[in-house]
Length: 504
Image 1 (cartoon, rainbow, N blue to C red):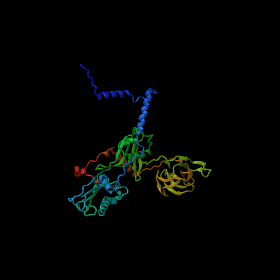
Image 2: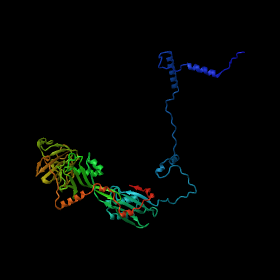
Image 3: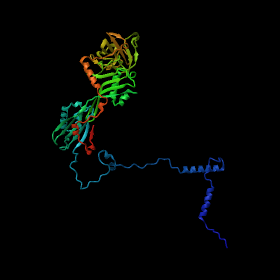
Image 4: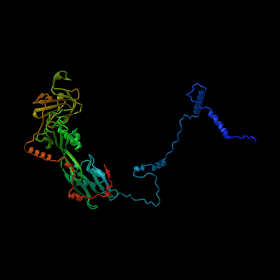
């Protein structure tokens, strides 16, 4: 049996041999090991060679040339406009339009909406007639509506922010204003006015719709707790009413020292509720507080001046005088060296440090004796008070009262300045008794009023009636009368989704 050997060329054998040879070659030695050996230097050579090859094929650092700008002419701009969304802002759709064919007949006139419903708002400082013209009413309709509404109520009593519902009809001719079909608005809290036509094309007619209003005052009571303000707000009192209550009560008791957490606050405010559901809060009428074993505080607004009186008929008691300015006292009454004249002389008043333009107020009620230039005192105002007391306020930048004018406690009479002999903005405040200068800091008295006779009897009767108001009774909804129930018509669903255009 003979031995035959296959001497033919085999690709598989060659591939295996090359793979074994390549696998035995260490192309990328680890440069972190065997540093300084032949293997390490061979790896370093490989690294340098590869880096050189990479730098050789690195692109140029010269700037690349951009594509030349496209030529944009009118035709291209027109194409851009047809494809953008700008037409949406003009009330149209975006995109291209198909050209009109011979089947399209142009309209002689574009059709108009048969009716326009809109809401106009009377802005502050605006005029009722001007607002109607701006809404689109013609001159004749505007004059008729203004005259009719003016006969029903003074136009000046229409409060800013009032919204007027307006319906305009179809034009009678090209270029003519749309005729008014209907106009309605809430003229007052207790009155609604509407202007319309009973028949199509008929004359305008004004309709008054009185709104039933309940004037029961709103009484709010509760425990003081941790904070009188927060407790009163949590009880449902408006923020303005709580502030008025704290201000009034603070003139008779010390809110920080004399009010405890277990005390009960009690105040009543004017309140109106309409049959349509709207509510309107008014001014503070009664302010009281129950303090356990201490006397109860009861204050009620009375008289044309709106002052608060105690249950006994004694008016507002003011503990001492007010500070004429909120600044600190910089110089007291007595002998001192004058800062300008340089010698010692009597300083017949108090100096208050304050910024230029700070308001100066009257320390108590009085009458203006003089208001003008007063030598070294500069611009000065002098007041005459009860009990033979006069006060003078010097160095004003400007005065806010005139001679003979009556002023109230806390009323602004001028502003801080530096007129006359003065080194800077401040107030020099003087006081006189019987014409002789006295130390203003030594005088503390109270101003009060006292009711008597028939006036006192009417006051106590009104107070007793006010105290009978139940707490929270005014918050209940007004029950509709039989006529109001019969007049109500169910609202259709289609009416709920109708929207009106709003003009401001």
